[in-house]
Length: 344
Image (tube, rainbow, N blue to C red; front, top):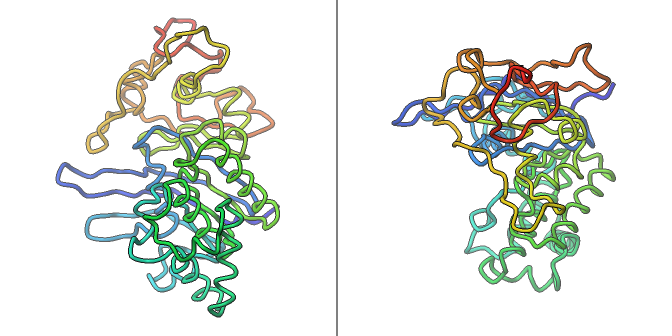
Protein backbone atom coordinates (compact mmCIF):
# COMPACT_ATOMS: atom_id res chain seq x y z
CA UNK A 1 0.00 0.00 0.00
CA UNK A 2 1.33 3.45 -0.94
CA UNK A 3 2.27 5.63 2.03
CA UNK A 4 0.14 8.81 1.98
CA UNK A 5 1.98 11.99 1.10
CA UNK A 6 -0.59 14.03 3.04
CA UNK A 7 -2.55 12.90 6.09
CA UNK A 8 -5.06 15.25 7.70
CA UNK A 9 -6.96 14.26 10.83
CA UNK A 10 -9.86 16.21 12.36
CA UNK A 11 -8.53 19.59 11.23
CA UNK A 12 -10.31 22.61 12.67
CA UNK A 13 -9.55 26.25 11.89
CA UNK A 14 -11.51 28.70 14.03
CA UNK A 15 -11.35 32.49 13.72
CA UNK A 16 -12.24 34.55 16.78
CA UNK A 17 -14.28 37.54 15.61
CA UNK A 18 -16.29 40.27 17.37
CA UNK A 19 -19.45 38.44 16.27
CA UNK A 20 -18.29 35.13 17.71
CA UNK A 21 -16.11 32.17 16.81
CA UNK A 22 -16.22 31.08 13.15
CA UNK A 23 -15.22 27.48 12.46
CA UNK A 24 -14.19 27.96 8.83
CA UNK A 25 -12.82 24.41 8.73
CA UNK A 26 -14.67 22.09 11.06
CA UNK A 27 -13.36 18.56 11.51
CA UNK A 28 -11.92 17.81 8.06
CA UNK A 29 -9.96 14.60 7.52
CA UNK A 30 -8.35 13.42 4.30
CA UNK A 31 -5.38 11.57 2.85
CA UNK A 32 -3.60 11.92 -0.45
CA UNK A 33 -1.14 9.57 -2.14
CA UNK A 34 1.73 10.67 -4.42
CA UNK A 35 0.43 11.32 -7.93
CA UNK A 36 -3.20 11.44 -6.82
CA UNK A 37 -5.52 14.36 -7.60
CA UNK A 38 -8.23 15.35 -5.13
CA UNK A 39 -11.00 17.77 -6.08
CA UNK A 40 -12.63 19.98 -3.44
CA UNK A 41 -15.90 21.64 -4.44
CA UNK A 42 -18.57 23.73 -2.74
CA UNK A 43 -20.13 27.17 -2.71
CA UNK A 44 -18.16 30.30 -1.85
CA UNK A 45 -17.67 30.44 1.91
CA UNK A 46 -17.67 26.68 2.39
CA UNK A 47 -14.09 26.71 3.73
CA UNK A 48 -12.18 25.44 0.69
CA UNK A 49 -9.56 28.20 0.54
CA UNK A 50 -9.09 28.30 4.32
CA UNK A 51 -8.52 24.55 4.24
CA UNK A 52 -5.81 24.96 1.58
CA UNK A 53 -4.04 27.72 3.50
CA UNK A 54 -4.18 25.71 6.73
CA UNK A 55 -2.69 22.67 5.00
CA UNK A 56 0.16 24.87 3.75
CA UNK A 57 0.81 26.19 7.25
CA UNK A 58 -0.08 29.74 6.19
CA UNK A 59 -2.82 29.84 8.83
CA UNK A 60 -1.53 28.78 12.24
CA UNK A 61 -2.30 29.15 15.92
CA UNK A 62 -2.43 32.79 17.01
CA UNK A 63 -4.29 35.39 19.07
CA UNK A 64 -7.23 35.48 16.64
CA UNK A 65 -7.04 31.92 15.32
CA UNK A 66 -7.22 28.44 16.81
CA UNK A 67 -5.97 25.50 14.75
CA UNK A 68 -6.39 21.96 16.06
CA UNK A 69 -6.02 18.52 14.53
CA UNK A 70 -3.10 17.08 12.62
CA UNK A 71 -1.57 17.86 9.22
CA UNK A 72 1.24 15.51 8.26
CA UNK A 73 3.01 16.26 5.00
CA UNK A 74 5.70 13.87 3.83
CA UNK A 75 5.76 12.49 7.37
CA UNK A 76 6.24 15.89 9.04
CA UNK A 77 3.69 17.57 11.29
CA UNK A 78 3.25 20.97 9.63
CA UNK A 79 1.74 22.71 12.65
CA UNK A 80 4.37 21.40 15.07
CA UNK A 81 7.11 23.10 13.04
CA UNK A 82 8.50 26.57 13.57
CA UNK A 83 7.82 29.27 10.97
CA UNK A 84 11.40 28.89 9.71
CA UNK A 85 11.01 25.12 9.34
CA UNK A 86 7.72 25.53 7.46
CA UNK A 87 9.37 27.86 4.97
CA UNK A 88 11.72 25.03 3.94
CA UNK A 89 8.64 23.04 2.86
CA UNK A 90 7.25 25.80 0.65
CA UNK A 91 8.45 25.16 -2.88
CA UNK A 92 10.10 21.72 -2.96
CA UNK A 93 7.48 19.92 -0.80
CA UNK A 94 4.27 21.91 -1.14
CA UNK A 95 3.24 24.90 -3.23
CA UNK A 96 -0.01 26.78 -3.77
CA UNK A 97 -1.66 28.54 -6.68
CA UNK A 98 -3.60 31.35 -5.04
CA UNK A 99 -7.00 32.38 -6.27
CA UNK A 100 -6.36 36.07 -6.90
CA UNK A 101 -3.25 36.86 -8.98
CA UNK A 102 -3.70 40.58 -8.32
CA UNK A 103 -2.80 40.11 -4.65
CA UNK A 104 -0.41 37.17 -5.14
CA UNK A 105 2.22 39.23 -6.97
CA UNK A 106 4.22 42.11 -5.51
CA UNK A 107 3.50 45.13 -7.75
CA UNK A 108 6.99 46.61 -7.25
CA UNK A 109 8.88 43.45 -8.25
CA UNK A 110 9.44 42.26 -11.79
CA UNK A 111 8.07 38.91 -12.93
CA UNK A 112 11.59 37.50 -13.13
CA UNK A 113 12.25 38.36 -9.49
CA UNK A 114 9.09 36.56 -8.40
CA UNK A 115 10.21 33.41 -10.17
CA UNK A 116 13.96 33.39 -9.49
CA UNK A 117 13.81 34.14 -5.75
CA UNK A 118 12.52 30.68 -4.84
CA UNK A 119 14.79 28.99 -7.38
CA UNK A 120 17.90 30.59 -5.92
CA UNK A 121 16.84 30.12 -2.30
CA UNK A 122 15.45 26.58 -2.41
CA UNK A 123 17.32 24.99 -5.35
CA UNK A 124 20.54 27.02 -4.92
CA UNK A 125 20.69 27.95 -8.62
CA UNK A 126 22.96 30.77 -9.74
CA UNK A 127 21.49 33.87 -11.36
CA UNK A 128 21.88 32.65 -14.95
CA UNK A 129 20.51 29.16 -14.31
CA UNK A 130 17.56 30.58 -12.33
CA UNK A 131 16.67 32.94 -15.16
CA UNK A 132 16.84 30.14 -17.72
CA UNK A 133 14.59 27.99 -15.54
CA UNK A 134 12.16 30.90 -15.07
CA UNK A 135 11.98 31.43 -18.83
CA UNK A 136 11.20 27.77 -19.39
CA UNK A 137 8.48 27.85 -16.71
CA UNK A 138 6.75 30.77 -18.41
CA UNK A 139 6.96 28.95 -21.72
CA UNK A 140 5.38 25.84 -20.13
CA UNK A 141 2.36 27.77 -18.91
CA UNK A 142 1.80 29.31 -22.32
CA UNK A 143 3.14 32.85 -21.97
CA UNK A 144 4.44 34.25 -25.27
CA UNK A 145 7.88 35.90 -25.38
CA UNK A 146 8.77 34.51 -21.93
CA UNK A 147 12.27 36.04 -21.78
CA UNK A 148 10.83 39.54 -22.30
CA UNK A 149 8.08 38.99 -19.72
CA UNK A 150 10.67 38.39 -17.01
CA UNK A 151 11.60 42.07 -17.15
CA UNK A 152 8.01 43.33 -16.89
CA UNK A 153 6.02 44.27 -13.80
CA UNK A 154 2.72 42.52 -12.94
CA UNK A 155 0.63 45.53 -13.94
CA UNK A 156 2.01 45.26 -17.49
CA UNK A 157 0.42 41.82 -17.91
CA UNK A 158 -3.21 40.87 -18.44
CA UNK A 159 -5.15 39.14 -15.67
CA UNK A 160 -4.83 35.80 -17.42
CA UNK A 161 -1.09 36.18 -17.85
CA UNK A 162 -0.69 37.12 -14.19
CA UNK A 163 -2.57 33.94 -13.27
CA UNK A 164 -0.17 31.92 -15.42
CA UNK A 165 2.81 33.57 -13.70
CA UNK A 166 1.38 32.49 -10.34
CA UNK A 167 1.06 28.92 -11.63
CA UNK A 168 4.65 29.03 -12.90
CA UNK A 169 5.82 30.23 -9.47
CA UNK A 170 4.05 27.31 -7.79
CA UNK A 171 5.65 24.79 -10.16
CA UNK A 172 9.13 26.32 -9.99
CA UNK A 173 10.65 23.97 -7.39
CA UNK A 174 8.90 20.77 -8.53
CA UNK A 175 6.65 20.40 -5.44
CA UNK A 176 5.47 17.00 -4.25
CA UNK A 177 2.04 18.51 -3.50
CA UNK A 178 0.37 21.34 -5.40
CA UNK A 179 -2.67 23.04 -3.87
CA UNK A 180 -4.43 24.78 -6.75
CA UNK A 181 -7.09 27.22 -5.53
CA UNK A 182 -9.17 28.13 -8.59
CA UNK A 183 -6.08 27.96 -10.83
CA UNK A 184 -7.92 28.86 -14.05
CA UNK A 185 -10.28 31.58 -12.79
CA UNK A 186 -9.01 34.42 -15.00
CA UNK A 187 -8.27 32.33 -18.09
CA UNK A 188 -10.27 31.73 -21.24
CA UNK A 189 -11.49 28.24 -22.05
CA UNK A 190 -8.62 27.35 -24.39
CA UNK A 191 -5.95 28.38 -21.89
CA UNK A 192 -7.85 26.66 -19.08
CA UNK A 193 -7.51 23.38 -20.95
CA UNK A 194 -3.81 24.00 -21.58
CA UNK A 195 -3.15 24.67 -17.90
CA UNK A 196 -5.18 21.69 -16.67
CA UNK A 197 -3.46 19.47 -19.25
CA UNK A 198 -0.08 20.73 -18.03
CA UNK A 199 -0.93 20.02 -14.38
CA UNK A 200 -2.13 16.52 -15.30
CA UNK A 201 1.05 15.86 -17.28
CA UNK A 202 3.30 17.08 -14.46
CA UNK A 203 1.36 15.03 -11.95
CA UNK A 204 1.92 11.90 -14.02
CA UNK A 205 5.59 12.59 -14.79
CA UNK A 206 6.64 13.68 -11.30
CA UNK A 207 4.10 11.77 -9.19
CA UNK A 208 2.99 15.20 -7.96
CA UNK A 209 -0.16 15.10 -5.86
CA UNK A 210 -2.71 17.84 -6.55
CA UNK A 211 -5.55 19.31 -4.54
CA UNK A 212 -7.78 21.08 -7.05
CA UNK A 213 -10.14 23.60 -5.45
CA UNK A 214 -12.65 24.80 -7.98
CA UNK A 215 -16.16 26.08 -8.67
CA UNK A 216 -15.86 24.51 -12.13
CA UNK A 217 -17.47 21.13 -11.58
CA UNK A 218 -16.61 20.13 -15.16
CA UNK A 219 -12.90 20.62 -14.51
CA UNK A 220 -13.09 18.60 -11.31
CA UNK A 221 -15.12 15.83 -12.95
CA UNK A 222 -12.58 15.31 -15.72
CA UNK A 223 -9.32 15.93 -13.86
CA UNK A 224 -9.52 14.33 -10.40
CA UNK A 225 -9.38 10.86 -8.91
CA UNK A 226 -11.45 11.64 -5.83
CA UNK A 227 -13.77 14.47 -4.84
CA UNK A 228 -14.73 15.97 -1.49
CA UNK A 229 -17.81 18.19 -1.27
CA UNK A 230 -17.65 20.88 1.43
CA UNK A 231 -20.49 22.85 2.96
CA UNK A 232 -20.23 25.34 5.84
CA UNK A 233 -16.75 24.18 6.83
CA UNK A 234 -17.50 20.45 6.84
CA UNK A 235 -17.02 17.63 4.34
CA UNK A 236 -20.49 16.37 3.48
CA UNK A 237 -19.57 13.77 0.85
CA UNK A 238 -16.45 12.05 -0.45
CA UNK A 239 -15.70 9.23 -2.86
CA UNK A 240 -14.16 8.50 -6.22
CA UNK A 241 -15.04 11.36 -8.56
CA UNK A 242 -17.13 9.13 -10.83
CA UNK A 243 -19.19 8.03 -7.82
CA UNK A 244 -19.83 11.55 -6.51
CA UNK A 245 -20.82 12.90 -9.92
CA UNK A 246 -22.67 9.80 -11.07
CA UNK A 247 -24.52 8.80 -7.91
CA UNK A 248 -24.42 11.60 -5.32
CA UNK A 249 -25.65 10.60 -1.89
CA UNK A 250 -25.93 14.00 -0.22
CA UNK A 251 -28.76 16.36 -1.29
CA UNK A 252 -26.28 19.25 -1.39
CA UNK A 253 -24.02 17.43 -3.86
CA UNK A 254 -27.08 16.62 -5.94
CA UNK A 255 -28.19 20.26 -5.88
CA UNK A 256 -24.74 21.46 -6.99
CA UNK A 257 -24.80 19.09 -9.95
CA UNK A 258 -28.36 20.07 -10.84
CA UNK A 259 -27.30 23.75 -11.02
CA UNK A 260 -24.94 23.08 -13.94
CA UNK A 261 -26.40 24.45 -17.20
CA UNK A 262 -27.40 21.64 -19.56
CA UNK A 263 -26.61 21.81 -23.28
CA UNK A 264 -29.75 19.84 -24.13
CA UNK A 265 -32.07 22.10 -22.11
CA UNK A 266 -34.86 23.88 -23.95
CA UNK A 267 -34.14 27.47 -25.05
CA UNK A 268 -34.75 30.10 -22.35
CA UNK A 269 -34.92 27.45 -19.65
CA UNK A 270 -34.41 28.78 -16.13
CA UNK A 271 -31.13 27.95 -14.49
CA UNK A 272 -31.66 25.83 -11.41
CA UNK A 273 -30.44 27.26 -8.14
CA UNK A 274 -30.19 26.10 -4.55
CA UNK A 275 -32.84 27.91 -2.56
CA UNK A 276 -31.83 29.86 0.54
CA UNK A 277 -28.43 31.01 1.69
CA UNK A 278 -25.44 29.39 3.42
CA UNK A 279 -25.62 29.64 7.23
CA UNK A 280 -24.13 32.36 9.40
CA UNK A 281 -20.93 30.61 10.45
CA UNK A 282 -20.71 32.65 13.66
CA UNK A 283 -24.02 31.07 14.69
CA UNK A 284 -24.63 27.94 12.61
CA UNK A 285 -27.92 26.06 12.94
CA UNK A 286 -28.07 22.95 15.12
CA UNK A 287 -28.01 19.61 13.38
CA UNK A 288 -27.17 19.40 9.69
CA UNK A 289 -26.07 22.80 8.41
CA UNK A 290 -27.75 22.18 5.07
CA UNK A 291 -31.10 21.32 6.67
CA UNK A 292 -32.65 24.84 6.29
CA UNK A 293 -32.15 24.57 2.50
CA UNK A 294 -32.89 20.87 2.07
CA UNK A 295 -36.16 19.50 0.71
CA UNK A 296 -35.63 16.20 2.51
CA UNK A 297 -34.85 17.53 5.99
CA UNK A 298 -36.85 16.30 8.98
CA UNK A 299 -36.67 16.88 12.74
CA UNK A 300 -33.63 14.63 13.14
CA UNK A 301 -31.75 16.62 10.49
CA UNK A 302 -32.52 19.87 12.33
CA UNK A 303 -31.32 18.65 15.73
CA UNK A 304 -28.51 16.12 15.26
CA UNK A 305 -25.30 16.64 13.25
CA UNK A 306 -24.86 13.73 10.82
CA UNK A 307 -21.47 12.03 10.57
CA UNK A 308 -19.70 10.80 7.46
CA UNK A 309 -20.63 7.18 6.76
CA UNK A 310 -21.34 4.89 3.85
CA UNK A 311 -25.14 4.50 3.95
CA UNK A 312 -25.41 1.93 1.14
CA UNK A 313 -26.57 -1.50 2.25
CA UNK A 314 -23.46 -3.64 2.28
CA UNK A 315 -21.33 -0.72 1.12
CA UNK A 316 -19.78 -0.89 -2.32
CA UNK A 317 -16.60 -1.66 -4.23
CA UNK A 318 -15.52 2.00 -3.83
CA UNK A 319 -15.87 3.73 -0.41
CA UNK A 320 -18.55 6.41 -0.65
CA UNK A 321 -19.41 8.38 2.48
CA UNK A 322 -21.93 11.14 3.09
CA UNK A 323 -22.88 13.14 6.18
CA UNK A 324 -26.65 12.82 5.79
CA UNK A 325 -29.49 11.25 7.81
CA UNK A 326 -31.58 10.86 4.64
CA UNK A 327 -29.13 10.09 1.82
CA UNK A 328 -30.22 9.74 -1.79
CA UNK A 329 -30.33 5.98 -1.92
CA UNK A 330 -33.59 6.20 -3.88
CA UNK A 331 -32.21 8.29 -6.73
CA UNK A 332 -32.01 12.00 -7.40
CA UNK A 333 -34.75 14.47 -6.50
CA UNK A 334 -35.57 17.83 -8.09
CA UNK A 335 -34.01 20.81 -6.36
CA UNK A 336 -36.52 22.26 -3.92
CA UNK A 337 -38.98 19.39 -4.41
CA UNK A 338 -41.30 18.66 -1.48
CA UNK A 339 -40.46 15.68 0.67
CA UNK A 340 -42.74 12.67 0.51
CA UNK A 341 -42.98 9.60 2.68
CA UNK A 342 -41.45 7.60 -0.19
CA UNK A 343 -38.35 9.79 -0.07
CA UNK A 344 -37.79 8.71 3.51
